[in-house]
Length: 156
Image 1: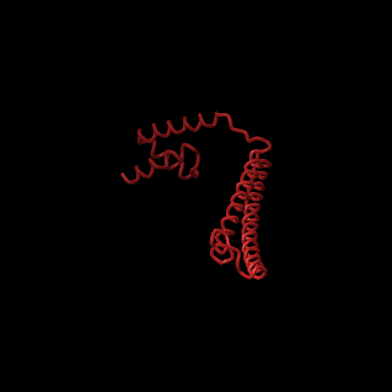
Image 2: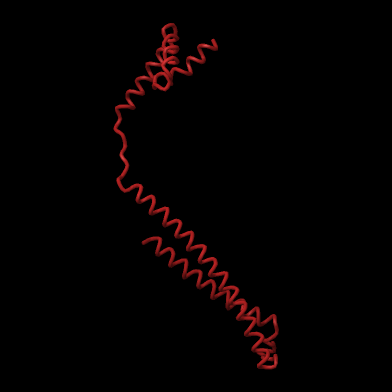
């Protein structure tokens, strides 16, 4: 029984020609006495012949060139994204530096008091809150512009 199970598993391989000559002979010897394996061998052999007669697909001539161009484009997009991230980080640092410098300069020149609606705009809280809001709006606008530019380039 164990020998039959092992031979039954080898039938498909024998039908496809994937066995060595000695293994194929062993399977053929088994099939002389086993009707089930012989019928399965004939079925798989017919499948193999049918598959061999099917037309073989051909690859487009420029497939490799298109694939390479796409990989290079993806690499360029990733590099551009890293550059954009570094640029935003540098602009953020520059923005904070300018904000702090302007705050210090304005406090020095005005004596530390510029009031509007009873609030001293040169206190740290109002100054940095205002500059944070202005910087956030500016950064959001820049991000949307870069994103729309990138989408337009991707479509082209």
